[in-house]
Image 1 (cartoon, one colour):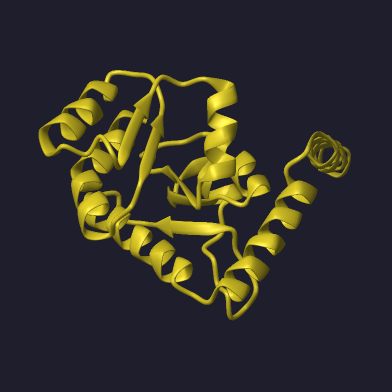
Image 2 (tube, helix red, strand yellow):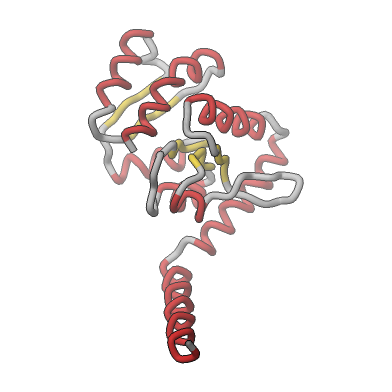
Length: 182
């Protein structure tokens, strides 16, 4: 996550000032001091909140946000990108590992996807994905609501204990079948 935080620090000031965004950073770690420094240096206290990670606060963040950032350079699994869409918060993520498996780029014309993926792991790649998210956010409210409702329903059906257990059982059965026939 450290490299992902670095990308976000590179574009944070631009996002807040050029796109008039409000950002809540709910995370602990070594990069937190950099976020605090950016907020202090640019006087962004009214637009950027930086808080230590807390499970309850993170769920409030999902519920109150339009987007969550997961600009990880490597992510074997990750949970936020599976939790946030249940609340209607769409993920902006680097197309890697478990993020690749759980986030599909939003295509409103095809009525598919649940977030915004960038392939080039650099500040311009993240900025491009944020631009895609902002274009979605600029759509008429009724279209946004339709897509977000779809994403919420699909995420609730896909990212739950029952479905995950069923997927594991299916994979184990496939492996057993391969060992019998192989």
